[in-house]
Length: 92
Picture 1 (tube, rainbow, N blue to C red):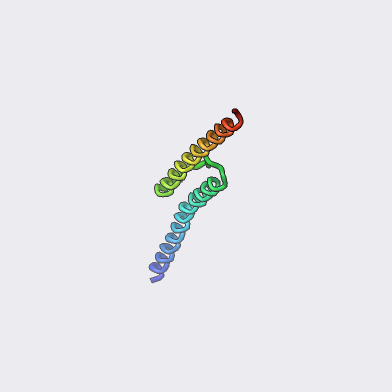
Picture 2: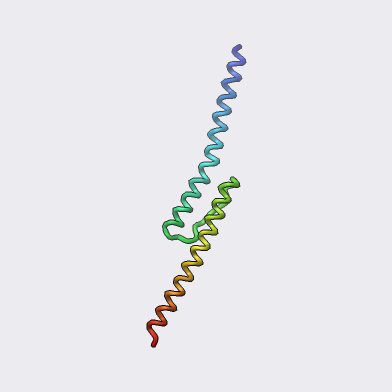
């Protein structure tokens, strides 16, 4: 009887330890992804992103990178247009 209780206790502790490890494995990349999104939102158009090893998070990070590239392209186009318009207005 004592052996069964001890085995159950060890199994519960092992389960808790595995849950903590998995939670840390998943939460760290989410924090990193949130920081990258914050960088993008604050104006840095090309935040640094690394692969996390979690397929779903890597897909979100890849889409965030594509969005970053599109924003950079649109900003460059807007700057070029503003420079061209400014030049047109200054020259008769």
